[in-house]
Image: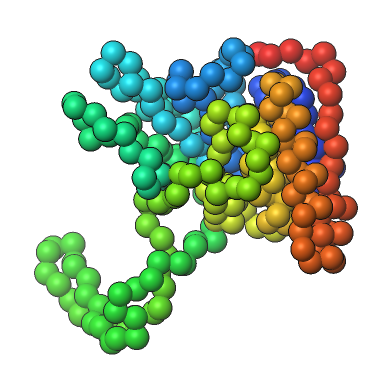
Length: 281
């Protein structure tokens, strides 16, 4: 369990930047968040300063660029390089493909890409690769070859191809209802995909870790952390969205079918902490 329980399983109605300033250094091992996509969606008119959110651990940063006057904004590149300049490792770049979510265009191949930047201070301490891609030739024996630096090829070994392999850097998701049955989330204009949040949490943290979302919105990261046996911490400045997150987590905990598991999850539910005068930064 994290050493400071004051920040575990809590939803703060508060500016994420101001909230992060309260946290001890090196306190949060994983941040999973989806900041505003430029001006693609409205979030109540609150300002967004990404530079103040470059803090510690592993950060999974899900972004998409707005197309302005026929050109991509370049915002995601600016954010990624800023993290590098303040000491983060540009550990991994992934593409999030919302299958079926493409738009037609006369001048480009659909909408701008959705990126998932995995950023880290030093080497990530945890990586649990998800192995769920079916191998076409599962069960067959195949030779394994490796190319030397000089260009020649050498034979390494013969292996039996496994049923499944580890995912690549392009994750395909069904855009639909963001893979959730939580009807109340329809009030949130840009809900994070539940499957995406769950798989990022699984990949880059271990059970008992604390997972932060400084722009918690309707609480997708918090919900999936709770269901993945992690502690959650969320900051959200918009009271309407914070209300959604509180309702959603309570509903989630009480809807688990297994009695023992349900009681265990309910016992982990924290509380909402009201803004105590800390304003947005």
